[in-house]
Structures are given as C-alpha cells and as structure tokens.
Amino acid sequence: MSHAYRAVGWNRQKRLYDLATGLGVVLFLGFFVGGGLWRYPDATVETLLIRGLGTAAILLLHVILSIGPLCRLDQRFLPLLYNRRHLGVTFFLLALAHGAFSIVQFHALGDTNPLVSVLTSNGRFDSVSGFPFQPLGLAALVIFFLMAATSHDFWLANLTAPVWKALHMMVYVAYGLVLLHVALGALQSETAPFYGWLLGLGAVWVFGLQIVAGWRESRLDRGRSEALDSEGFLEVCSVAEIPDARARIVCLAEERVAVFRYGDKISAVSNVCQHQNGPLGEGRVVDGCIVCPWHGFQYDPATGTSPPPFTEKIPTFRVRVSSGRVWVHPQANPAGTRVEPAIVAEATGEAGV
Ligand code: HEM
Ligand code: FES
Image (tube, rainbow, N blue to C red; front, top):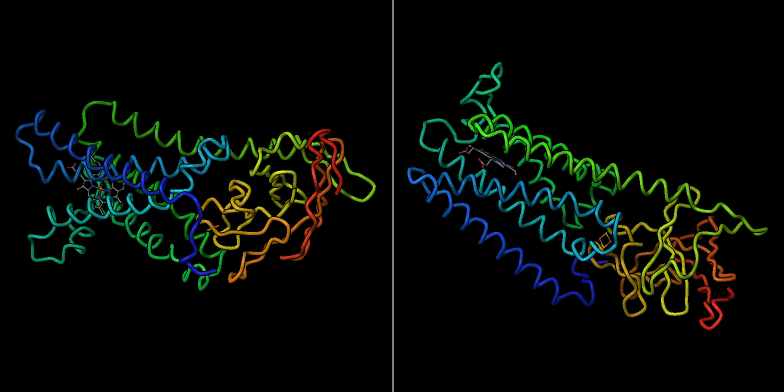
C-alpha cells in the first residue's frame, strides 16, 4: 500500500482538528508572551518566546503520550488517535523552534560553532543548580528528529518493523531527557515549588496512564471466559458487547484478535495493521472495510486483504455465533484467507456461521 493511501471519511474533521490545534498554539504563545510582558516588563520578547515555545512543546508532548493509553481505556478518545500524527508534527516544530531560538540567542554570537557551544560551554557536571541542562534538550531534540525523519513508510520498510518500533519507543527516553532538561534548567531559577510539582504530576500522569491501561488490558484478557467447544472455538464475548461497525479486542493464544461486528455480520482478524502495527480493533468499519485508526489502511473483514490495487494481507480467524455469544477459533489462518462472516439473526439474537 502506498504512503499516499488515505483514510476515508474524516477529512473535514482532520481539517477542523488542525485548525483548532494551530489556533490553540497561536493563542497559547500570544497569552504566554503578552502575559509575560505584562507581569515582567523587563523581560524580552525573545526570551519569553523561547520559554513559551518550550512550554507549549512539553504540554503537547504530554497530550500525545496520553492519547494511546486513554484510547485503550475508553473508546470515546479515539477521534484524538486518528489525528495524533498531526499533533506529533506540531510538537516537533514547536520543540525545534524552541531549540533553534535558544541556540541563536545563547550560542550564536561567540567564535565557537553554536552546536559545539551547546555541548561544551558549561562543564559543571558536579552541580545541580548549574548543571549543563541544554545538552539534555539537544539530545531529546535529536531523538525527536530521528522519529520525525523516519515516520515515512519508506523507513518502516527499510528498517523493518521491529527496529522501527524500537526507535519510536525512544520517545520515552526523550521524554525523560526533557524532564531532566526542565528540572535542571528552568526550575533551578524558579523559587515557587508549583512548577516542580506540575512537572512531577505530568510524569506520574504519563507513566501512570501506561501502567493502568496495560493492567486493565491484561485483566480483560485474563477475565475472559475460557469456554472451549468441541472444535476448539473459544467463547470471547456476547454479540451485544460489540458496537456496530466497531470491534472488541481479545487475546487468543497470546495474539491480539479484533472481532468486528458490521451490520448482521461478525468477522475476526489479527489486531495488527501491516503498515506500522496500528491497533486495527480500535478502528471502525467504513464502507465495508476495516479502517486502521492510525493512518487509514483498509482491510476486507472477511478476507483480511486490502482492496485493490493494494496488496496488504492480515491473518483471519474462524468465527461462529451461538445464542448471542461469539466464538473464535484461536488458530490464525494464513494472511488473506477468506472466512465466511458469522451472521447474527437480529430478531432472536441467534445466529449461525
Ligand atoms: C537544542 C535543544 C534545546 C536547547 C538549546 C534548549 C534550551 C533551553 C533554554 C536555554 C531554556 C531556558 C529558558 C529560560 O529559562 O529562559 C529552556 C527551557 C525549556 N525547554 Fe529547552 N532547549 C532545547 C530543547 C528542548 C526540547 C526538545 C524540549 C521539549 C519539550 C524543551 C523544553 C523546554 C521547556 C519546557 C523549558 C522551560 C520553559 C520555561 O522556562 O517556562 N527544550 N530550554
Ligand atoms: S495505517 Fe498505519 S498503522 Fe495502520
């Protein structure tokens, strides 16, 4: 599937979302700089802009890191997930502008190369209040840059999915570096403890959300009925538990499976998108195709294949419905194998394969 492949149906929402993000950033920076000048008349616009850009970036980073676990906890957050990439780009541009303006402001006037100056101008590694916090920000920026530069499908294909995923998990290393950058930098000159608490609260929120979402998923996996019929099908949920055009994600034989209901049909496919491992079960069925929530790749729920001219394929699973309960066979079929959807008989809730 080409990188030009587009999700269907959310274009207007995406535009509104981008508009709201852009407006939010401009208003935030306006208030930050305007309010700063009003409160500290001696401050310069440049310094306030540097601080405003850094603050906007770190706030956005918290939002971005919260979206994934929030969606796993409550599907109502899903519209945020559909547009996370745009937030990522906005965040990177803010962080880049903050870093670039800082380098121009504090390191561009000497004889030394500005980047070398960031790394070497302060050697007080034995001091907390005077610690060279700027190289920490630079290191974080380099990681964010690598992530932004390799977000294109070309790199996913060339680096292979596990390497690509490991690289993108580095976001947590970069987040840690940003926390240190702020704690050892701006917070050292702040006398009010409020900002320190806010930073700590942000870290507890980000890591706490990940832990709670992971714990809830594993509890759901464990709590699921393990009823097994004579042909090896496992009971996974009731038909009523799957909203129309949506899925329920279950873990079978240590593999995540997305069980979709669309109209009177039920199909089960692997939860892992072939593009960048996006969680297909958090997507929905639009015009008869499962649409991945991350970047809109599409799959036929019955065959697990992308509509022509695309060639992606995901494994399918055999499904049956009996007395309003859904049963799935945990043995995955080879990617792209057609499985007749189970049909739900609406009037009685009864169904056959
Ligand atoms: C080349 C990379 C970077 C350099 C040279 C740099 C430099 C600075 C400097 C000099 C300050 C202190 C500003 C002041 O107190 O007047 C600062 C603060 C800050 N930086 Fe960075 N930074 C870099 C990267 C980053 C990145 C990637 C982030 C990610 C979000 C970030 C977030 C922040 C935040 C939140 C503050 C505190 C803002 C405030 O004082 O209210 N920085 N940075
Ligand atoms: S479309 Fe990108 S991960 Fe599914």
